Image 1 (tube, each protein chain N blue to C red):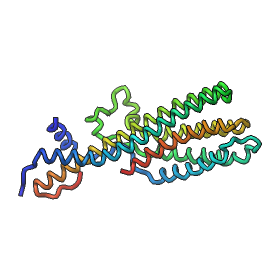
Image 2: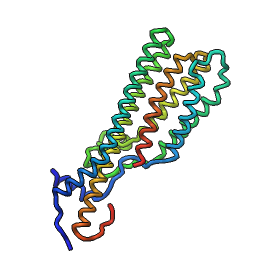
Image 3: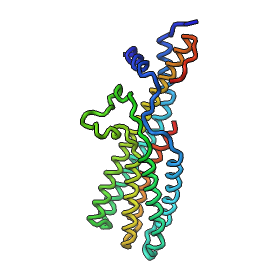
Image 4: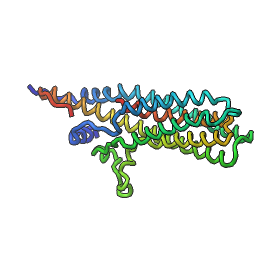
Length: 113
Length: 159
């Protein structure tokens, strides 16, 4: 027998399904970003130190500066990739919760989308 | 707004995949190559003065070869291009239509190319006899940044 869907309860279920997972992932993401930013700052410190002490030729300096720029860009792209992954997780958690709710309300077993 | 979102979800009617699938052979390969690289960095941390380059040449070549093979493997992995991109405003525009893969391109191949360049430069520096401890510190810190990026992304794909 069909029953009505409680929109408020369903909304809460969707938010919970998404944020339970998202909360853990965002903490991990924050740790990754902080570690990377510290490492990038350390690299800048190492380049400056090696330059000041005369260890780097002009060619070496250019290489390490270009490398720092590229590594920073890779970091930004990695962060963007990880965020896209979070969008996927939230989307799928929402769809899964909706399908379960529709199946329960209609009294039918819907195949998972 | 909630109703609109619900309608979009229902009309799409499916779960989506916005990033490549987890590939255990890439993660295992990265982990193994990283172990070898970190062991190597430890062995040259004081610089290589007085030690012949030929002692290390094989290790450089192995590491560069391994990361090159992993890059090709990551490049060959399919990149999903789902319909949801239209809803999220991430669909390729006319200006980028020739390069739709850039929208959701996994960062791993670029990161591995960066690692290969670092190791190649380090090898060449070592070959010229100038691999001091200052150079090793610069290469090692930079390498660690890149390998952490690759491992963080690839491991996150196991969702």
